[in-house]
Amino acid sequence: MFGKFFDKIKDGLTKTRNTINDAVTQVLKLAVEIDEDLYEELEEILITSDIGVETSVEIIERLRKKVISERISEPDNILPAMKEIIMEMMGDYETSIVPEHTPEVRLIIGVNGVGKTTSIGKMAARIKESNHKVLLAAADTFRAAAIDQLEIWSKRANVEIIKHQEGSDPAAVVYDAVQAAKARKTDVLLCDTAGRLHNKKNLMDELGKINRVIDREFAEAKKETLLVLDATTGQNAVIQAKQFMEVCPIDGIILTKLDGTAKGGIVISIKHTLNIPVRYIGVGEGIDDLQEFNSREFVEALF
Image 1 (cartoon, rainbow, N blue to C red):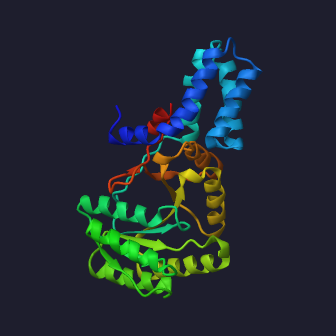
Image 2: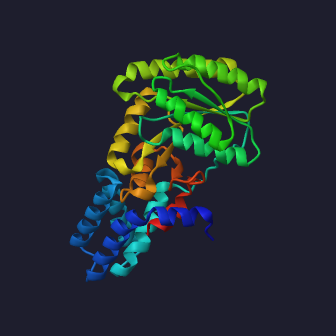
Image 3: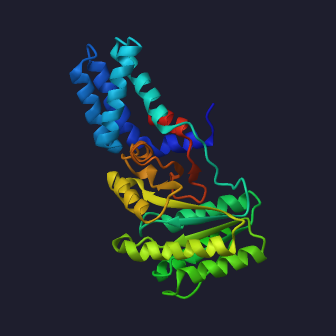
């Protein structure tokens, strides 16, 4: 029934599962009946698991209705009901790192330290493995370290990179990368772009310029913007996503460091409060540890 993703995510979610599942199971074991106290305890567990106040309240509200409509009388039957509710909220969608249509341009944005460059490197390796041509664009030009780091990943993944000097115009890098992608018949162009949220106006202008270059020079390519968030930051990741959404449309989330946190409930919060799908997740340090997100398997692994 479940594949490689499930094994990886199950291992990666150990800390989160210990927080949510163990606490819920313990509360249900001690509960004599389904009453207001039980609902309050369950809501508190969800909130402390970084599912967020708004999302946790919604889950418990739906649970109350489900208990009444399905005439659930035993506390033992609460956990399966909660799983169903969370699955409904997540939506049953699947995604693929390997492109379905080519050519494709993926703009990857995110603040420093969230694992943006690492995610791009891992994504490039996966796409290359599937016999697609990949090109990287080092358009996060304001940090020399970002360019150097992307170059290291390009070598690891054995893909080519287009780069300029530190401090150069990011849109100029993307322009050159687009020309190279067309000339080399590249399937996927991955652009590492900056995420300096403290100066939203500059970031908006920069991303607008990059998008205009792609639309003008590479109109035939499918284009999407992916935001990288760090799962260990919990609800701060949701706040960050909201700020980025003010700057540009976001097509999907790459959620990193899920294996190192007890805050994996953030996935549910992101989907419910922002209605942006989590597309890929990072569950380890290895080059193959960027996984496609599967909502059903995620909820199964969580409980």
